[in-house]
Image (cartoon, rainbow, N blue to C red; front, side):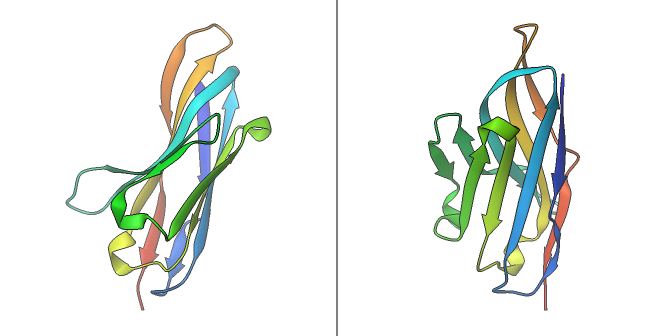
Length: 120
C-alpha cells in the first residue's frame, strides 16, 4: 500500500490563494490517477479535481478557472493551486491516488486530509 502525505492547508482570507501538495510513497510501480476531494461540514465528500499520468485534467464546475491541478510523476506528487478562494471552498481536502504497486496489485489510497478555511 502507498502512503499519501498532504501539506499546505490553512486559513486564508476570501480572494486569497493556497497551494496544497500531496506526496505518495511506498512500494509504488506507477500511479494512474491522482486527485483532490473535499468535504465540508455536514456535506458529502466531493471530487474537486483529477489528473492522469498523461496530464489530462478535470475539475468540478465550482472551481473551474480558479483551481489548477498538476503533478510531478518523478516525485509521485500532486499539487492543487487554489486562487480566488471563497468561503464556500472551506473544507477538509483529501488527496487521492490510484496506485499500481510493485506487487502489481491496484489500490486506492487516501491522504489524512488537510483543513482549508476561507474566512475574513
